[in-house]
Length: 552
Image 1: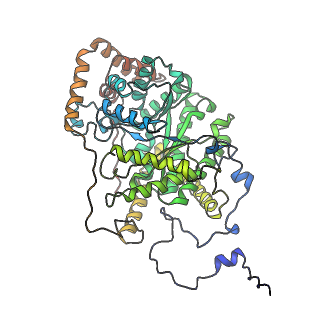
Image 2: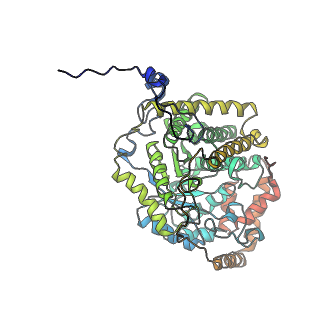
Image 3: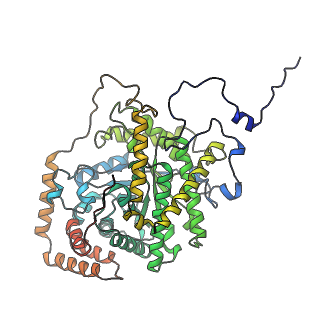
């Protein structure tokens, strides 16, 4: 006798039917950002038109990926962040990573460099080389890339307020190696708006800072066509405690603001938009992150085409770098961070990233050791070569849950766009502390959930160990700071002082005037071995500095 066919319930009935047992779990059934999640997702819950909302990979609206073949044609760039101590030490780490299969360089700078101070400035005391490499002048940049052919590697540099100065140094090193500026490849972050919003490493007020950013965009569009002058960064917004929707919305709003300023400068959108890039966080909520990346591509393509009238298909492509979430790493049971990072990296790959950095498991404690960095790189290599996830493009596309998250995040982003526009745009909203308040409230909600046990963090509020074994961490020798101070002081003593003073004078006069692109003058100052601190002090003298109103 044939078995009886089970009675099939409709997807709507399955979704609405109450469970027969009561869940014993006390955690929240939401994403890490607080978006509610249904027990099951069905076709009726997702408004989806394939051609309008998805399309083929490499075709508008690029939800499924910016390139037709994605990782079947070429893997993402494996770009481990590196920088500590002196330029000589970081050069050694660069070489180590390249020898172990890294395919692009990514440079971290120390706090004095990020804030535009030389290593011998009183405010630099105790910070030189601690969080990244100390770069005071072109001489340090020459050491940093000694023996590394800039015509063959792609270099990323994470610096913002003094980004134009670092780009000038890099360009000069390329010249010394015989590499024309038009052939240099890489990205410099330059995203000053997110500094006011989240990371707080700004120097000048917003308007002159935006002028400097726009100078870089214009200069790169005409002189360095292979270079990305801005990496619009959501990473630090998320690290400050934002939700996924806030990271998505605030990052894109910043990107549109850079486009607006470049257009006001007189550039055509297709002159510069193809070289804008993005930088996102890969947090722990696996599916939410994938939905975020897909929504970001779709929004950017739509707005560049419909709002800004871009005609070059490359202008519509949101290409982005991803870094796994540093804020998700714990000092407790740090080896567990290996698991967290692997899952975050997998989400970035399934979300279609073009470049990826995987955090090392010991980064909640210190800068990573060589062993930890190698393991982080191996994580990417295992995903690329052993999991099979690179063999098909956007494998989660069409998932009811992923498409629902993509749509929901897109809708929340547009709601934020409307609120920002009503405040007068991004710069005005920064001055009103809008972004800062939104992030603070989201961060407070998440921390309260952790403290109340509604959101589990392994090793922190559940599954703790009574005694933990210490791990070996990287320690920066204090003698390195003394050596760096001596180097910058010796540089000032041996350079052509008159040439340095003349270059600084020209820079100050141009900064005080309207309509002068400062990049050529920064290159001249770099060749004269004017230091980072001297250049920033000259601009501080003309433009002043910025101090925000605290948010309580």
